[in-house]
Length: 144
Image (cartoon, rainbow, N blue to C red):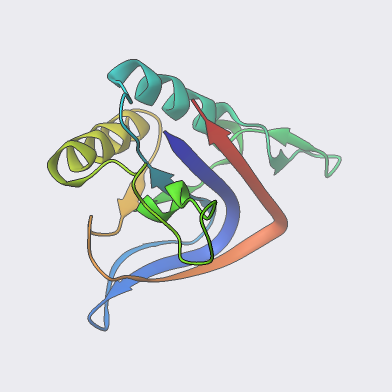
């Protein structure tokens, strides 16, 4: 499982010219799954995400989590996090978990996150336009 975390101002996801998820401030998560990912990994990474200290404290030092700072999460499924370009310029996605199993894990991950804060999502498998205002910029890759 891979989660690309971005500290964000306004962010939204659009499908067919309709906004289906948006936040004003918080985290944007790009989430991908691979064979062997488990419920335990999902629980671990959900806790890691919400406890990641990447928001400013009173001294403008990145020392607060989203739980302390406040904000929302926009979670987007992204199988391309498992792109492999070892054999050339056309990426292979053979390592990305397919279909129904990946959908279940994505839903479980978002349920775990909702235990801590408000979560908006895109639609799994849809062609989405994601708008992100990356603050900092702060981008961190988590993998388990």
